[in-house]
Image 1: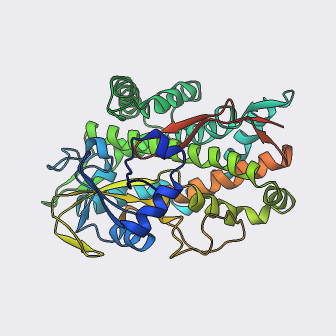
Image 2 (image 1 turned 45 degrees about the vertical axis):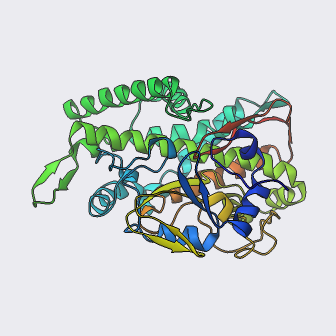
Image 3 (image 1 turned 90 degrees about the vertical axis):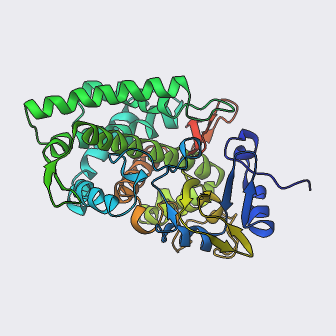
Length: 395
């Protein structure tokens, strides 16, 4: 069987990680990787418990392995890299953008975009399910929510995609990704400056006008850096993981044509199908945390000051939680950890669910069946996001 080894940079493992994840859960539920200096938790119960314990498992040192370090990151603008009380204040501010009313009001726009993208493919018997459809949708929706002008939205999407560029042995911290990140943040900074001069009815205006209360009780508006960081976080997070969810939907449903046919015949099954897709193939299967105290799990001592990776993807396949977990089943019910738990539960979860449901509903109306051209499909590998970059289909 060979020595047990896992790391988030190994593309061969990442392409087919399921047996490795199973061995981690069975043989080393608290796994140590000396090469990259981290620990990994792979069982559902342990991943969920860590999400619920931010005092022990901190996000302030980074949540992506390449950037995690001993000192907390010197940023208060990236909410995912903060702990309470900073996180509590920042989340309260941003959560106003994702109220049920505001998200629900987007459904017609989401549906219109889906139909627009599918209309463009009407005279074709093949297209890229992801690049022509699934990846465009969340990018345009979050850009619209923020207030990015429509003529700029496609360029913004390309920059976002490039910020997730990965290079062997380096990961996402590389010149190509950093240049794209710099260009994206420069563009968002220009848009925020425009909102300061001429406010509009959009979320970028909300960010420049929002007030926050500091530790000393002082009320102030967000700094330019904080507003820019928020905008960048929202546009990246709101685009990348939903694109991966829809990419997996295209692939997994093609592999299960009987269940796809059920969905085409009864779209009321789609909400549960989205949850099953998130469990079965988590778009973001790895989240990093940094221990602020000693931890002992399964007889293994993890010292304070350790980098710990929570394997969400493995947790979704844990037979201790799910019967027959490697079987995809749109009728399965139950929770998953693909949106996290606790204080860092994904703010955009409701929007992601809406986009996934409407995108599949409209696709199934037009094309109740499709085949994936796996010879031309392109995988996407990063240390925290997993899925496809291209999913060519024949309809």
